[in-house]
Image (cartoon, rainbow, N blue to C red; front, side, top):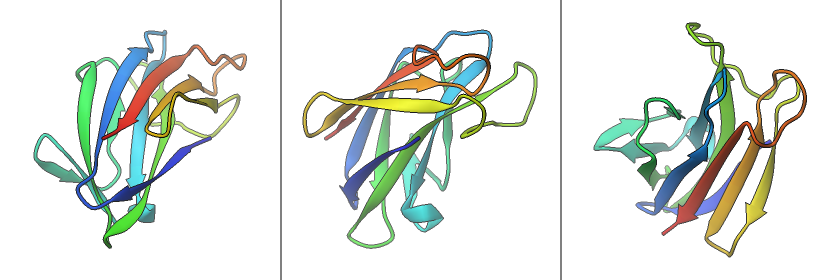
Length: 129
């Protein structure tokens, strides 16, 4: 259900949306050290940001800021019904297959929780730099 990566303070993730254009809004959410840490995106410090396929750039740089020198970042898929504010995750037929390309690059094949389990609902490449 989530990708967990060990990170050090200031380490950067490159996040690239590969697909995710469905009838439901698709995105990914980040969490560092169970809300004790933050990420920085475009100079803004955030605790649990969501990047949406329809509004985020194709590639986003995410700077990891764990509370201590080292920590963990978790990444998972989210979705919502077009026009609704509620964000859904971890319910219904939600799931994720993590394809590890090498020790720093992962492709997340995600199924939203709506309808049949479908790992083609959203694909995101995450690279640790």
